[in-house]
Length: 141
Image 1 (cartoon, rainbow, N blue to C red):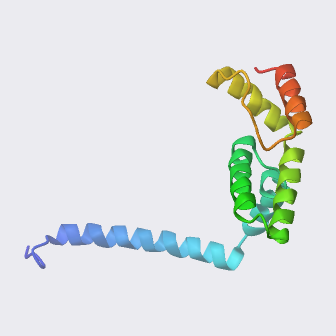
Image 2 (cartoon, rainbow, N blue to C red):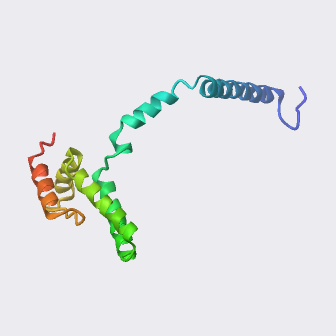
């Protein structure tokens, strides 16, 4: 058989079949997504019910947020609106430190990293004490 552009007809047939299957899969996916959209509402509900996408913060992210908040606070000492925002972030992080996931994280840090006292400077002394107590009482499995 003669080749087309140096490619054997068998290979052209296989390429055609592959492109055909890929096109069919993409068309079915597009129709499912655009026309039916059956999974969109489900994902929205899942996101809305996930507390870590709405109001909770895990401890490692909280530490990064606290560091950023401290930098912002120091860069804008004279801006009352930024100071108000920083105060809100501090209160939010303080509330999050009372959640179980922070106690589990603190317990893990002490065991894995070997630190006796991972110091979370952004928390008040009272919140830090509560968190350390909760971490000590945590039963790791």
